[in-house]
Image 1 (spheres, rainbow, N blue to C red):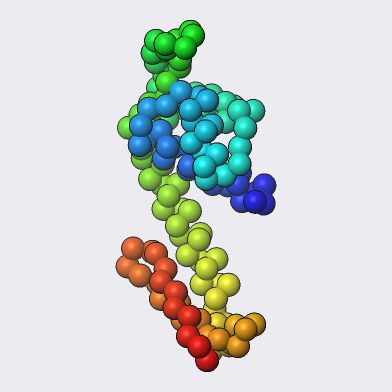
Image 2: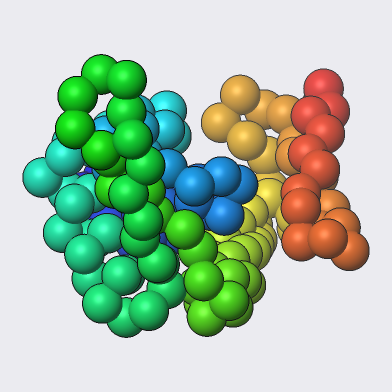
Length: 133
C-alpha cells in the first residue's frame, strides 16, 4: 500500500479501534495490522501524540503474562475527533471515486469493453454494477 495513503488513514483506524474497545499498545498494533501493515515504531508515537492531545486516556491493568499493561481509552474529545476524521475521509473518498469514474458514468467503456454504473447512496457508500456490453 502506498505509504502516503496509509499515513493519511492510520489515525482514523487507531481511533476507531480504540473506540470499539480499550486496548494496550501491542494489541492495537495487531488490530491495525489487519487493515494496514504497521509496526510498533509507527503506532507508539501516534498513541503518545493522541494521548497528549487528550483524545486518549490511559490506565494500567494487571497482566497474567508479565508487568501491568497500559490501556488506551477514547475520551469524549477523541470520539468527536474520530467522527470528524471519518467525515473528512468519507468526503475525500467520495470525491476521488466520482473523479476516477466520471468518464465511465458518461458512457465511456471500461478497458474490457463493458460499462460501469456508479450510484452514490444516501450513506456515502457506493454500489457498482457491471453490465456486459
